[in-house]
Structure formats: C-alpha cells, structure tokens
Amino acid sequence: MRIGILNGGGDCPGLNAVIHGVVGAADQLGWEVIGFRDGFEGLLPPGDYTVLKPKDTIGILKLGGTILGTTNKGHFIAKVGNGDIAEVAAEIIAKAKRTMDQLEIRALIVVGGDGSLTTGLQLYREGWPIIGVPKTIDNDLGATALTFGFDSAVSTVVDALDRLHTTGESHKRVMVLEVMGRHAGWIALWGGIAGGANVVLIPEIAFSLEKIAEFIKQREAQGHHSTLVIVAEGARMPDGDLVTIDANKAGEVRLGGIGDQVAASLQQMTGKETRACTLGHLQRGGAPTALDRILGVRFGVMAVKLAAAGSFGRMVSYQSYDVDSVPIEEAVHQLRLIEAESELVLAAKAIGIRLGD
Image (tube, rainbow, N blue to C red; front, side, top):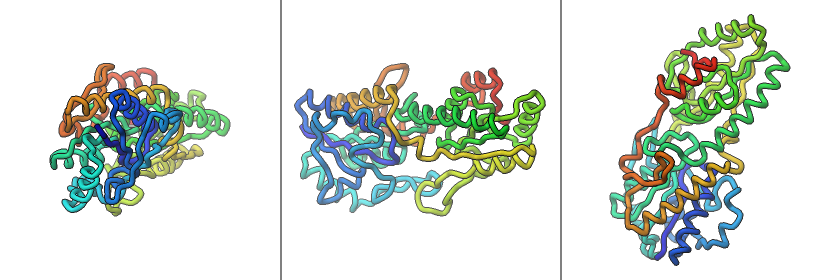
C-alpha cells in the first residue's frame, strides 16, 4: 500500500514530528509513504514529491518547520475574504487526481488548519481517500482539545515576557506585547498567565482602554512602576474594529498592529512611556517542545491507523488525554474560543490579571 502526506497552511512546530510518526507507523505495516512538497500544490502534474523512508526522518523531531515545505497560497485556497469559503476549481482537482492515480495513492493525509482541512473535506466529497490531522498554533479548532504547535508558541511568548519584564522594570515603562492567535485568545491567555503579565487582552472579551489606564495608574501609586500588557492580534479595539495589515488583500485578512495602537493610547492616557513589541513569526519558528513532539508523533500514528481501517473523511482529534478521530465535516469552521466565565479566565482574574472588562 502507498499513502501520501502533505502539509498545508502556515508552518508550525511539530509538523516534522507528524511526518516522523506517519513514516514510522507505515513502515511497520510495510507501506510506502509519498511526501508531497508545498502542500496541495505538489499534487499538480507532473507532481512534486519524494519517497519518505524511516532513514529520511532521523533527527527531524527536533526541527521546526517541515521538511516537505508548505504554502497558504496557490490553486487550492478554500478560505477567502474574512472567513468566507470558496471551492477549488474542478479542473484543478482533476489534474491533482491524475497524480494520485498515477502514483496509486490509497490514502492522503492532510496536515493543516481550518483552511487546508476545508480543502480536504471538498476532496473527500469528490471521492478522495482523505484523512485530516489538525495543525495550528492558535489551538482554536473545536473538534480537538489541543493542537501541536500551541505549546511551542506559548513557550516563545513566555520567554519574551520574561525578557520584557526586565527591560520594563529598568526603564519604568509600560510594555505591550502583541501575539498571534487570530480570532482566539488562547496563546495570549496561557502566555500571559505563565509569563506574569499584568493585563491580558483577548478577542473573546471586550476591553476598555480607560479601565486599563486607570489600573496602570493604580499600580504606579502602589509602587509598581512597570506594567506588562499582552494583547492578542485578533482582539478588537473599543470601537469594535479589527486591526489588519492588508484588509483588501485576497484570502484571509492578515491581522496585526493592535499592539502599537494600544501602546499609543495607553501612553497618552497615563503619561507613562510605553513601548510595543510584536512577536510575529517568532512564535511559529524554532524547535518544538517535548509536548508538541509527542503529540505530533501520536497524531501521525493515528492517521496511519485510520488509513489501515479505511476510515476516510475523518480528522485525528485529542480529547481527554486520548488520541482518536472525528468526522472532518464536524471539525472545520467550528472555532474553539475562550468563554468569558471559564475556569481559566477566573483563575487569571483571581491572581490579579486584568482583562480590561
């Protein structure tokens, strides 16, 4: 049996761990693994792929990114505008299917986020043997309690906060750190709690700049001359607007810039020198944590098990400490957001973190 694997969407720590898991589990069954380069684009004739053997995955667990490459552009984009969905053209699917048939691929493992899995779902409905593996540092897919890459991203945020603490204290400044997460605040909230932030601003909870400014003044009066603020890129300004880099560009809008706007407003309101820092793609790069390596391997192994069982149209899922699967159609377009009264939010508030509400 010959199976294929590809990575779609943004890069993410732990992708190579999934490849390692797939290749290792497939080899135990005597199967051959074909790795398609640069996502679905590798399926287009004449095909851009490589045969993956266990020797090819030695040492890749510790590597960030993906040895197969990935892309969030090209012919297979399923998400356009602000979350709108578009189908891949029939002629593109037909060309890619010829590559699948010529290579006799009996199962295609698609490792990606909501956009790539949306494409995978369309292909499955066209009769393709698709198995999904969820990938996003944002940890915002509703059908899985945890995604690989999230823990690595949070660790990067915590390291940044640790460093900002020292420079903020030295100069008696307000430090604002903007982090990724799109429309979910998991990275900001987890990172803020672990990194000792004083204020955490997330998309799920509307915030008031006036309340944050007043909190900073209170801290100043109490002898705390530096305040650390972390803001998720998808948090909305008090007027309800998202801050974007290129809102008119085709495809999903690129969020970014809210950190600078929050910093400018707080400096004006408090009179304290305020600096903004945007982590950006630093959160996607570097070696994955041990947790993400293990989770990635487990996801890869489960994907092969699903292929062996002929359980196509399903996505690997992590729930209650076990790795299982759910239908892809139940997994896509269902964001897992933070609930305003959740235990995690209440825990943050209990230790004095302000969320601006």
